[in-house]
Image (tube, rainbow, N blue to C red; front, side, top):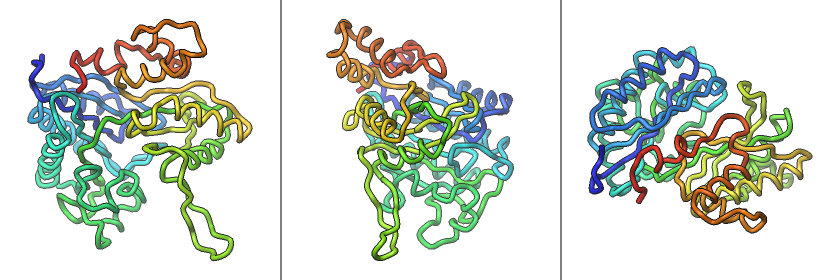
Length: 344
């Protein structure tokens, strides 16, 4: 489908619908009917009421597929009626554009900006740019922009400094607002805990995530931030009704700096401190093979496993217990295997 010289971008739009299969199917169709793109994966979360699509293609085709899917979401998702476990701000909550082969972050940014303008102008949806595409430090991170969620957007959009980058500066009650930007590869990774107490997961999330937590200074009565233990980690704690489990749910924004096994071991340590344990983990969407190979290499010293790529990946899957709540299939969940391209 793609040549070795093609610039390939990845798009991972998150839509605020995880229960109505007709709507999810319509969004899927909008992506698949766009020429020059390949839909790699669909992850439907009922409790989160959220669906994450992953597709790849050349820059112009990725932009078109993203626009068409956002358009369908705007037509069929009513945010005024939306409820779900996952933080959200709009019908198309976040739409990252990611360079993965023969492409740069600048290529991704160009598409993100063009898409943002089109969504704002043609669909009348307020759009906030994030990560590499944001020009303002205080609103680069997803959690900064999403703070207050959909319910707080009506007020937030009128606060100086929080006007959208594109689209109308007014509240869109049906679609909310969308967050679009260029970023590098992200791994959505959840760790399961042997407890039904969601506060335990929330405490662990606050302890490990880079942003840390805010506490009240006993001397000044002011709120101060205590940084977290792990860089490039975003985390929340939640209860997932679908699986009847409590999880530390994370986005790992740079797995080379903070590898998966480092995150997994740190959560095991903090779980023990809080009187519980880790039972397994879950991957949302796709993962580069190198991320799992690194995990296998870390754990191989305590096993008799082989050192081939497939053996290291198998060891990683087993040690992380990635099959604990749903099947993990290397042929379907490792991006190189399903996309048929080399990650550069």
